[in-house]
Length: 213
Ligand SMILES: [Ca+2]
Image 1: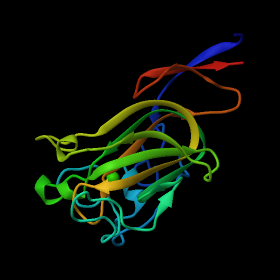
Image 2: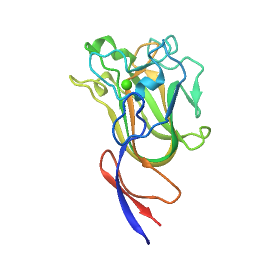
Image 3: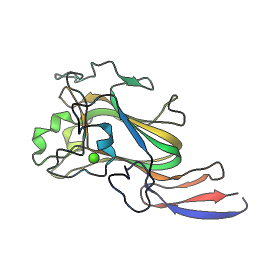
Image 4: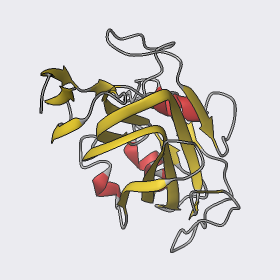
């Protein structure tokens, strides 16, 4: 290796900077969803930096009557992405990033029992560089309400090390309602170019290193 190394702190690249303009975030991301229950519940709500308790807004809420409301709560609808059936949300970062960590937060509510059956039971995170060919990044299955709330609010966290521009979260099963919610999705990493490469490390807010050639 020649050249020099540059240490970069991973930061949340998926957050909608137009509604939550934290220092260090980029702008220009676009968001889609396979469906929403009403205005104010779009996929972009899962990228607005708001997973606030007692807050009904700031959440993606899919259409209803698309998941079985009786066991096994599987998906009944027609939506699919990357060969994965389920309602989904996507973010186009606008350019390739080196992603090092993903966090999925539930919808929060002052009374968790009100919404517990709308949390995902099974979901997969996909990524793509061309918005056409998708690969699985991580998948969680057999989730229970205790994975989302155990007296305090929880989240799903996974360290990753991939280059991608498009990310999707697809929910294959609900915990018992005919629609599903996701409160927030955070994708951490740094911008990536053809002149940089990961040398490992990463994860969360931990620094990682690009090698510059
Ligand atoms: Ca949110």
